[in-house]
Amino acid sequence: MRQQTRDPQPDPTGGAPASPEVTVVVPARNEVRTIDACLDAVLDQQGVDLEVVVVDNGSDDGTAERLAARAATDPRLRVLHNPVPSIPASLNAAVAAARGRWLVRVDAHSTVPPSYVARAVSRLAEGRWVGVGGRKSAVGRTPAGRAVAAVLNSRLAVGGSTYHYGTRETVVDHIPFGAYPTALVRELGGWDESIPNNEDFEFDQRLRSRGELLFDPELEIAWQARDDVRQLFTQYRRYGRGKPQVALRHPGSVKLRHLAPPALVLWLGAAAATALRRPRLAALAVAPYAAAVGTAAAVIDRSTPPGTDRRAVPLALVAMQVGWGLGFWEGVRDVVRARTGRAPAVTRADGGGPGGGPAR
Image (tube, rainbow, N blue to C red):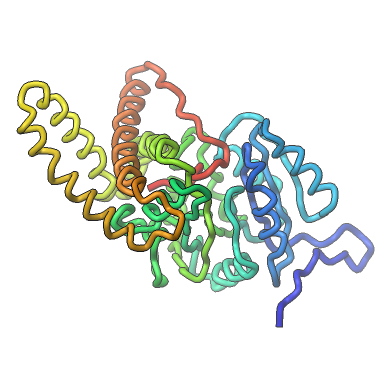
């Protein structure tokens, strides 16, 4: 039997409604194509008293107007405005306004099944975990986007990032779109606003000083992937650029897989320089990587859905790896400039657009 959503119950003394059990936080910027689907899914959650706090990051595509219209008809929805595009600032604004005991993040380009929030809260209520998250299953809207999604969902592409493909419950070092005790988030000071990218990974490292993070594959969020390979390259370049700053703060969090893309970029750069004088040697140097990409793409291609641009699969693999590696070296440059007194260029987060938060 389907369980009905419970609206916040009125105070028996006649006062204001009791505080909701859960606050769902949604950072958003220019998400007019997806915001309705996201809010429909969140507001259809079963078995929990909840409020939804959406923080608009200065949208100019009609998102703000859609939010205002929906908030006018559903008292569970509250809309805040943060005109400066910043995911950590938006999350902190939502935390400051949250009334729920538990905090659950859902991005504006994602949807969740009706039992998602109730299950996340039930796992937190066990008292064993400081944070809970599940599978981030990429989906595509376009033929190239479906290729991007297939790559993002493959272990051959994302390595040890369990939340992309995991099927077993396990303790992890990072969860995407996590669920946390609200009081603990406040105690830790929320998300660091000086880190515009990788802010969720950095927060999870601080959180791990208080306990363990649980990956629960029964929690699954459908997440809209980038629509083409060029957008994917830009996204992963931004992810990589944020990594050095986080690595300096939490050196123990650095894994071999984080260093592989920067090493690849150096290798490809050296091959490109060699090609000017010794093209055969350069081709031999690049050949193993090209073969690895071709093999991985062939395997991933077997699981792509109908309507996928299969030619984009190997391109997406290269875009992820080279984009992340190139961004990493740009992040190193930023750190050096900051430490020598020269301010780096600002790496602005996209305020909730696809992939605005989770980092590798």
